[in-house]
Image 1: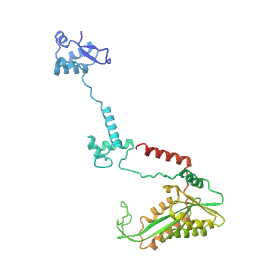
Image 2: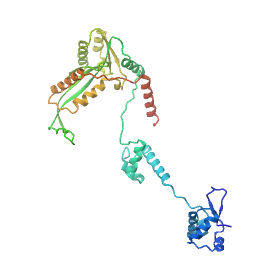
Image 3: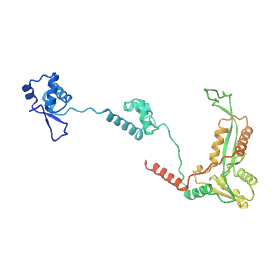
Image 4: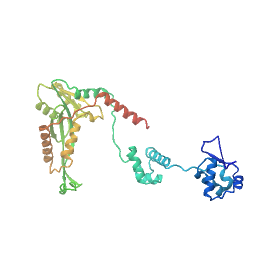
Length: 350
């Protein structure tokens, strides 16, 4: 009988010892003999490392050490997969006790791995705990009707009519920097002081022509219904009198004031289309407001409100000389599908 015998209840590669001490006495095998290890491997049709493994366990623990198969080491690949899963699960399902989100270093210390390991796992799984995006879903009961109306104006405007997106950008500050900044240089960006002197504010009323991209604008001290009526009269003067005017506006109380309603009754070519509540993204003039803020206002320095107004009017003139309309591409069904997906995503975690 040999040193090992096959165990039919286990896998084919599993070997169990049989009468190990009797086999040693019969063959007088020396523990450190290389030739004997090879001889045993040939007789039992196994490998020499397997023989060495079992003989080492016999030398350490005697026959008791041969009763069970030696525990196998966890492969590096399996260990890496477990670490990755733990990093991902911890990032998605938990937060540190002293913060709202994990950083690579805090999570690395928590799990006992390096922060670079955490960074690599986050990058491969598209995880960015340090970033957050804001959102707002409209609760307007007439959301679908208003959405359909406005998108229809954008994608299929009425014949012989102008579609104007109207809104006001209020409280634009005339800010003057306390010191002169350094100009842009090779290898260094331009600088500006973080503190400023306020010289007052103005409110910009703007009407964006959806098809042409031109803008009718006016600056006023306040944004009450009186100023809105003045701006409507300005639109009336600066548009062809034979065209119907469809104005996309938000739900600001100024736009629904009784005096405004009475004026609109006397000027039948004006038609107001209201965006759903919390849906300013439907009004294309908001996109134009972003342009004037980024290009002309945010980094500007103005000695007075008059300088600010002059800069705004100059930007409008430059825009109208080379207008570039914003093209609406999303259909109503695509928007509703995305809104429904967002609602499902916000409800599921709760």
